[in-house]
Image (cartoon, rainbow, N blue to C red; front, side):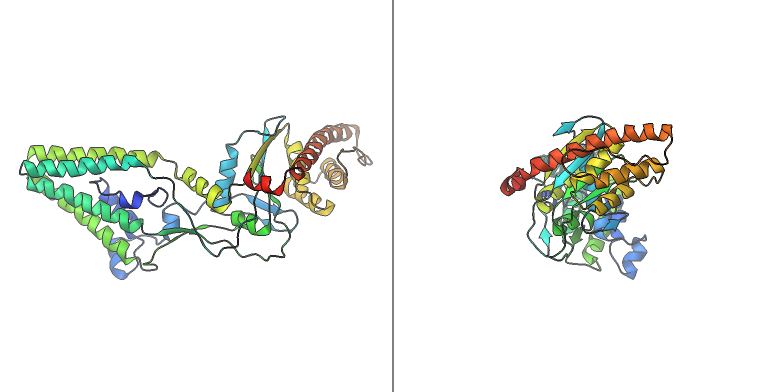
Length: 398
């Protein structure tokens, strides 16, 4: 049921005798809000978007290069994007195991609400429908009207539940931002530092990632009485099948169990589908407009952080601020390194650090880290130059 909004036609293809009606009723009955529904289906009230796992995950930190924005946590969409990038292998540069992804967002049209399209239709859903209808027909032919009625009751109740729960419209409401805002270029990274992602684009495009969220809109909000009635129907189905199926003939009972078995296998197939992958597909195509994604591999964390900071092409002060966010160490060696990187200019990294006050061990460590910084700096400069050589039309289609 959780994938009903993510797969095209899933709302209309629930006409089969499915097991688990009582579980579905208990789970979705808490959405209905009134004293009667609260008594029948007690629980903590949540919104449909969270219940159907379309929201609720905490995303990585975000640091803006030009706007000065600092966000300790972002939302569900940033979480999905980071997870999507974590599976990508180096495409343009591979010098080590420290991976960094760069996403170049195309300019998006200013829309108040975007209705999100589901994934393509899955024809396998026809199989349990045919089996359930066939089982009911066979029961009727052999005169087992108890089992016939219970199979058809399961078909009708599950079909109506998919129709009602699937009637919500999956939407995305872009956060508002001024057309005069500076570019939204920035860096996303998790607390462990295991993954870093540079985003480049307008403030409007970047805020779709950092502050945007899915919204599942129902016509019956905020009471959701239709979901309450369908939950009651599913509970009634469970009780009737529990007491009436034993009254049927052995052959009819076998047909009933056969329909449940095929439906169970189909539900297991639906459960095996990664709903996050479906959400990522919607995010990358409908919300972000198929952005360009490059992944680079660098030798160590130092070179990776320097690459990310230099790639954003910010002012020396902003570059230093990004380095401070990603490398909070304030030892003398790290302070000299960050100062050297922030003040560097040109395409070649010139190692001219201030060595005053450092002992022999600290000087050796500083030179080692400066070599890693040189790799990150010069590779970032090469990458930004290559971006300028790509025409705007190519950037939108890559």
